[in-house]
Image (tube, rainbow, N blue to C red; front, side):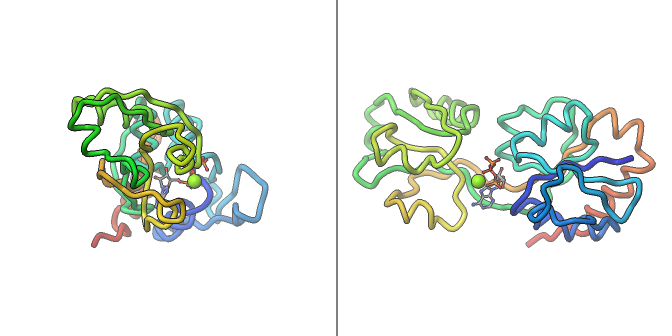
Length: 213
Ligand code: ATP
Ligand code: MG
């Protein structure tokens, strides 16, 4: 049995065509079903539907053989116990620093001010500002980061941005690019050794279906 860990939403939607290329079709739509384990047309392949940030944990411990997770989530997790053989080039966005336009980010950095940074990406933010030599107080949030500068919880946020419409709707502006983000296929290290004959053809089919541009 091969167990594949996916999160609902954009990752599931964008992974579907790649699974199809490997001859894997889910029996149910996780957006409509409450089931956490979804069978596929292949009796030897099942999907587990979990939070995006839990995918690396399931793969690390071998509860899932394969997973799809954003680079953002993989950095925070650390990636222990898994290979990251494929960039699927899906769920693309950017990790950015954003602020209220009334906050002069450039000047604050230039003056060596201590920045209050709200984010769910503590590790990414810590490493990024350390490399810039900027002192920060990190404030951990679990969502809706855009609110933090508006109510003066933080000077800036570190968050994912794709179209920029959520920032715009809340009157924030992006002030710096941190990195490009996309989702990666991850494979449990022991699974790849023990189940190579089953897993390698799935990886190969997915690899040849990846869209590059
Ligand atoms: P949860 O809802 O469990 O807290 P989440 O909000 O991170 O998790 P999603 O919003 O579905 O879950 O994001 C899943 C992944 O998709 C992220 O880890 C990231 O890699 C990517 N992603 C997030 N936001 C965007 C976006 N605006 N555009 C493209 N990809 C995104
Ligand atoms: Mg979300």
